[in-house]
Length: 342
Image (cartoon, rainbow, N blue to C red; front, side, top):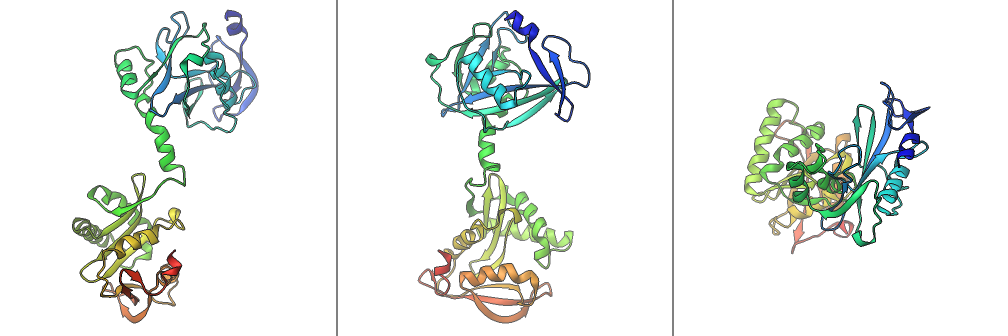
């Protein structure tokens, strides 16, 4: 092992993470302005426990401490994922194909870049082969146990340790476009995110041009949340769809979907939630842009798909020329356009 440490070479990178073509000898001081690549792999099982290792007491760097599943430096010629695969095999005898994986996050340190991989995997400890020069023990441990070990000073003090168990969930929620978008009645906790979306789409809603009008709208949203007439679509903690309606008047007051989340059936799902609350003996009405107004192309197309028909021309309370659209309901079903909603 000593010979390997003396002769191991690392690729040298620039601060932009571009290989320079130079090599660095492990164990020697890294010159200022040179950087190398390190990796860590965190294996987490279905019980949300992490496979952790205890470093040997004679190992350089955090000896005798408990650590993440594996970690180490990339040797010359390694890609990040190749280094992760190699460390898993060398330290634990575990073969996992990471050729298509990308780091879940990267942390820079004074001499390089540290790529972290979070891998969901069930592993039998009895089937592992520990590298005696590096690892003295392994075990599964949950978040609370690991944080307790860190508190008592027996776990390597990563500042982000409490976040690791949540990152995989974060990935599913915010980066995977197939993640579930929840539709339901808005609560007070959704208000700020609701208003963020309103700021994005305000140009499509006459009457929201000034800060004062946005404040009036915010107060309107609060009242609707309190009486249960505010529907929203939520992605993680982010409101991506909004709808206000009136049960008393059978009116759809406003509806919008975040530009990055359109064409995902959010509008139709919010509409269905609202429709279930309406008086079936009365028509549902909505005021939208007039036919010749280009701002009305998208909302009018949606309302027509839902079965609305043209009503009288009107002017909104804010003085903007609009048109009323009307939807007749019977026995809880849309009379016209119902087939298009399926």
